[in-house]
Amino acid sequence: QVQLVESGGGLVQPGGSLRLSCVASGFTFRRATMSWYRQAPGKERELVASITSLGGSTSYADSVRGRFTISRDNAKNTVYLQMDSLKPEDTAVYYCSARSVVGSLRSDYWGQGTQVTVSS
Image (cartoon, rainbow, N blue to C red; front, side, top):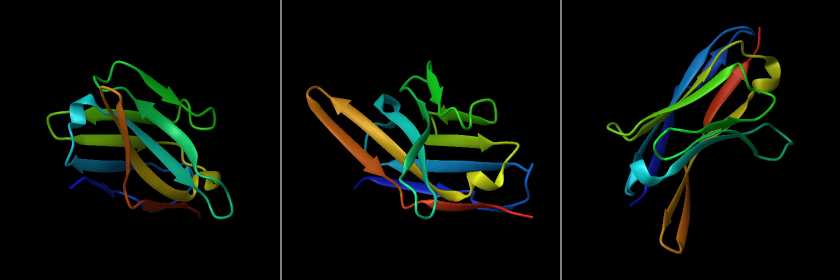
């Protein structure tokens, strides 16, 4: 059974920091590309950051580049999103996602989401 369990969300003031974690199980984590998405009320879900299976390549949305950092620990089956200099527009539900490709079979998995609220 595949599980992605996010944690670390909460309420933070503008300019503050949060670190999200996502613990994965039920698939070969080290082979999966891991991503963080977010969805604000009334908006579509958007890709925030991704990291390849060995962690050698990362990518970010323009809106978060330079403020957010994605990383992974394959020994702990965990992916992180360090969020600094948070802005009110970062308020959203943040989702962890995994893409596993084995041969011709591609599987996408999602966590349940964690709320991040940036407000004074």
